[in-house]
Image 1 (spheres, each protein chain N blue to C red):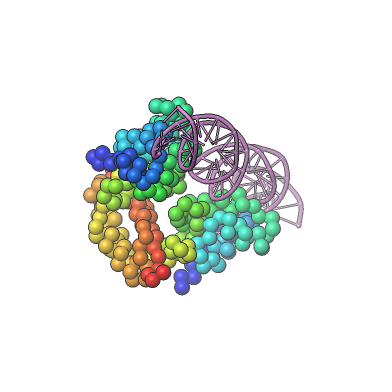
Image 2: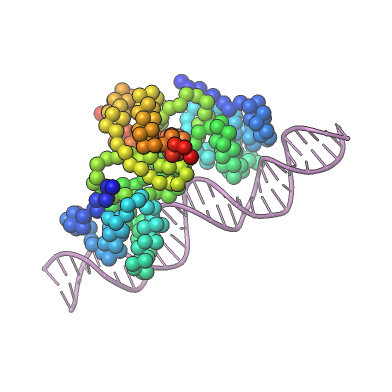
Length: 139
Length: 139
DNA sequence: AATGCAAATGAGAATTAGTCGCAACAAATG
DNA sequence: CATTTGTTGCGACTAATTCTCATTTGCATT
């Protein structure tokens, strides 16, 4: 549904990032991903197109892209970090505990309440994390 | 303020859990903890009272207690899992990004909204995680 | 109190997720 | 197309946690 927005190569180049072959490949994989892949999954998809790529480069690139706000890093439950292109509207996640599927949702009301709570405690929110872990009704 | 409720030895014994020396020790440490210690911290506190205890036992006991609903496991940011006795009212956390301090809070309104969202997506919430990462106003 | 035995422990090896150092390599720039 | 400086691939390394297995211990029974 989202069709996930790819972090544009142009924008990265403008930020002084070198557009290397592995980076272009990873960018393409992220652009085509409809899910929230972890580093290993990205690596596996990448190897299919360029046998030479290394897992370390995937990790390094993920960090680079994260630092440049091009992707978001999530840590659902305990497993490995999972990534998705940023740039779309902010959203939270509902994780299907049986299948691992991730469903995105938003709630302006919840965001407001969070702000209000932080305010009351004397804090300013830097970022937040809201994850619902659920099971399909009637399973 | 909370004084954190200790998971009672009696309740565990009733559930068929053997009350071993290391387990009693860990239970005592949790009962006395005013913070949200991770496995290593619990281990260090334990070693002070019984040099024989092993880190593996701490991990095993944490899993055991979690499975029995006696404690809650949290994974703030990326670091190690941190624990706290369960049994108190449900609460969420605000983490001070500068100091690492954890402040507990509750919001019935947010809980309701979460339920409503899950409902709308056809899910039943098994558990959730709401963390606000913030900075003290005027820092 | 002594006994039996399943369950739990300690010590260390193994696993998982991620990071680091370094020599070889390849983008960008002129 | 040569230079330079950032990037890559590889393997070694770390941190957190789990596993293996020989030994010990809780506890129900004698």
